Amino acid sequence: MRIFFNYTIITTLCIAVVVLVALVGSKNRQIDTLHHELALAKHTAEARKMMVEEARVLQKAVNDYNHALKVTVTAYNPEAGQTDSDPLIAASMRKVREGTVAVSRDLFDQGWVFGKKIRIEGLGIFEINDLMNKRYKKRVDVFMWDKGQAKAFGKRIFKAALLDI
Image 1 (cartoon, rainbow, N blue to C red):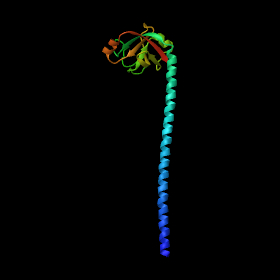
Image 2: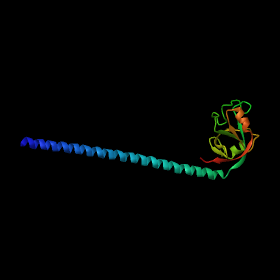
Image 3: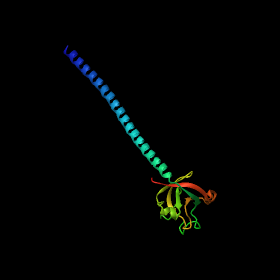
Image 4: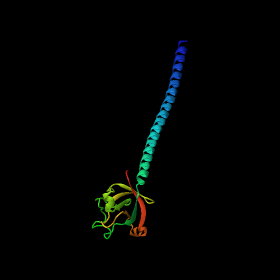
């Protein structure tokens, strides 16, 4: 009888351990699920925060764009006849690259300085990296690597605005 009683206690204890292990496993899965949901909520909150900030920046850009100027827009490429003695270095002392522009000195004097961004209607957003010859007024020169592409661009009138971003 005593052996049966010990066997019953051991069996009961084993069943209890198995049940407890199953419960712990279940709770661990629930905790993992909650950790995942928390990480997802944090990621979603960060994404929403970024969207709000992006909307604020875009609204600011729209407001700034209301102060747009009509400017003559041309294109240039790194050729000695179109630049100074070093066609690969801009007046800002940085390398020339796509997505940058040179501005006339009158615009530069109005705050259109190196590193600032401008939006040219229909073309996009560019960074000011270079200066044009003194003879030009109210003019922006878009940098392009390809000479044929720059010639094909020609001379056009666009609205352009200095952005505060």
